[in-house]
Image 1 (cartoon, rainbow, N blue to C red):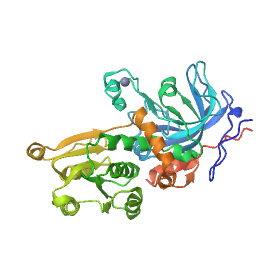
Image 2 (cartoon, rainbow, N blue to C red):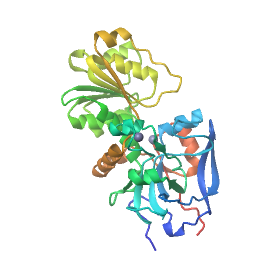
Image 3 (cartoon, helix red, strand yellow):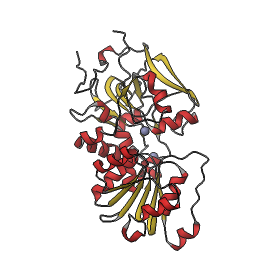
Image 4 (cartoon, protein in one colour):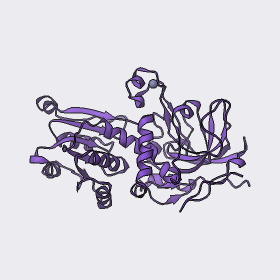
Length: 368
Ligand SMILES: [Zn+2]
Ligand SMILES: [Zn+2]
C-alpha cells in the first residue's frame, strides 16, 4: 500500500489506491455570484496525457473571494465551474502516455500552462499566452489535470515540504513574477502598497535584491509580518494626500520611490502608487481590478516626469518553480502567510469574510 504523505501538523491524504473512476467525490462548484455549492460529483478519470491528483491541501485566495462576489473570472470559463486554483496533492491515476510522473508522487500543480509557442511565450511572457490553459477545481477531493499542464507545470514536491506550503507555490509565483518585472536595482527606493500575500512576497524579493523597501498596509499584523519577511520599513496605508505626503517623506529626499508596486487591485491604491513614484520612476500595477474600473493619473506627470507604467499578471513555469524553491528554503517564514485549516463546507464563509489565507482539506471521501 502506498503511504500517505504526512508531516508534522498534516493529516493523512486520500490513498491513491482508493481511486475509483466514477465514484462520487465532494467538490465546490461555482454557479454564480455568491452561489458556491458543495456537491457530490463523479470522480474524474484521466484521459491520454492527463493525471488525477488527490488534493491534500488547497488554499483560499483573495482572487477566489473576488470571483465569488463577481460570479466569474477570465480564467474560470462558463458556469457552473469547479472552483479553487491553489492546491497540491498525490497523483492518484495517470492516463495513457504520461511520463515523468507516477501514481503516488507528491506534486505541486500550477493552475495554468502556456502553449510555449505563441508570440508571448517566445518572449518569456507566458502569463499572456494566447493559447493558455487554465485549471480550476482544487476545492475538491480529486483534480483532473489536463495534458498541457502535466507537460509543463506539474512539479515534484520537495522532500519533507508540507502540503500546505507546496500549495503556496502558485500565489507566491505571481508575486515573484511581479517583483521580477520591476527594474528596481540594489539601493533603489521601493514602496509596496498592500501587505497581503502578494505585497509580502514582492517586498521580500525586492528587499533581497538589495532595494530599500517601504511596505504600507492599514493592518498592524501585516506590517509586522512584512518586517519579518525582510522589508526595511513599514507604514500605514496612505488614504489621502496627507497620507501620500507622509509615505513620500520615507523615500530618499522625500522625492518618491524609484519603483512603486500597487499590490492591491483597487484603483485608489494604483493612483496612490503613481503619486508616490519619483521623476523617472516606475509603477507596477499588480492585483486584478474590477472589470469596469477606470484609472485616473495626471497625464502631465507621466510626460514631464517620465513615469513608466507597467503591470504584472499571473506567473510563468519559471516563476512557479522558483517560488516553490523559495518556499522550501524558508518554510517557517512562508508558513506565516497561511491561516488555520478549514473544510470544504467552510470555504464560502471564509472567502466572504476576507480573512487570512486558509488551508482547505478536502479530505478522504469516506468510502473506505
Ligand atoms: Zn490565488
Ligand atoms: Zn503561448
